Image (cartoon, rainbow, N blue to C red; front, top):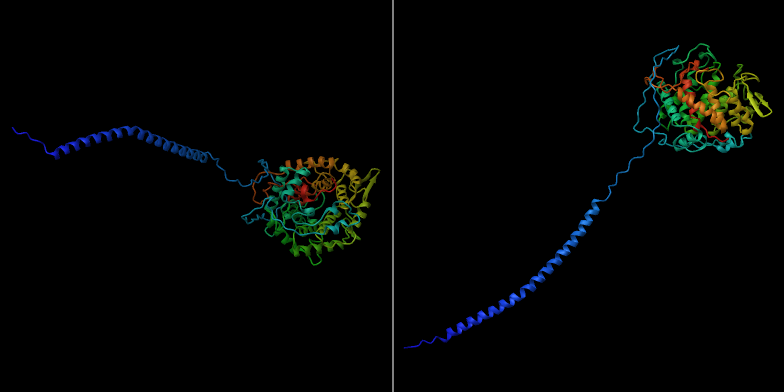
Length: 513
């Protein structure tokens, strides 16, 4: 029997295989023992990574939340300009007119892209000579001494536009209603301006001698055009400034064409001195508010004419530079005053002569000045205070002390404005001068007068109807048939005079308050 002995090589192989198995087993055991440690480390790292990501994501969320919750900034709104509201009351009206000479002219004005409000009015400056006024011997610290250069910010005319106007309205006792009434009146005057630039006296009023004078006794076109133009100037509108500058420009162009070689305007009718004095005031105020050589030259020529005026008619003659009529003296005084503010030449001692004539026509009592007469003492002053109003204003222009005028103020406010009861003591001519005089006087007298005057005018201004420039177009105007002088001069006259009264708050500065 033979025994097979395995080859050594195979034994070794088995040994190797067994050893290999054992080695693998040990390695597997090591690996198995290392697995929990590796897994723990991995979990820790993953946790740290997740924690880091969570922290980062949390920071981003906060940032996003901050952006989302940011308040939205609304765009800035344009400054709103407060408009003056005017109550419109529709009425059925019947307009009576005794004279219609031709077809009413409707004037169309080109509308520019920019229409200035009172705060957007362009400004210009034409310096007057305030020093030349204040050195007058009779002036002192009165109104005349306060009037300086024109332009947008100085002298008597500086508060006619812009923010100064609003402040003056509130300070003087005006309101949104009075400003609305002024604008409505100016719009009416604009619509009724003729194509050539004047206002036609033939469209309103009548030629019957119902009161005062016949309409044919005055050239009419000239006086009415002057009054209408003054209404625009008094509200700060000039040929170069303001919403109605085209209206003013056309009217002044027409006026300049009417001037004669001797510097005068109008015809030689009985009331031509009023035409010339009113036009002189228009040109002198324009010269003080603007800078225009044609206006300056025309203004100087009319002042020279008035300085040598020698009309010999009973009421309107001028003797040695002194107007016979106190009514005429009022307009002439204002014209010379405006001419002085514009730096124009005025007669030497012209204000002294006005003072002399006024003293001649004033009855004084124990308390100071009393009533003022028309052309002789006792004339038109018995229960009629119109000339007292004119005289009081002239005294104020001359710098008379306030205490010397109280008696006149007392007399004037005895008859406050009433609508529909017109006579020579309750008409717009008196209202115009009383308003100017009492505004300068101030105090309770002014408050009493202003309340009555402004209420009556605002309440009785016509509203509604067509706005086409025809005779039926009355919106913004005041009726004339009941007015003592308006019966003859018509609706243009009463509308301009009504506007003057409500423009008083900024037309001239008050210096006596």
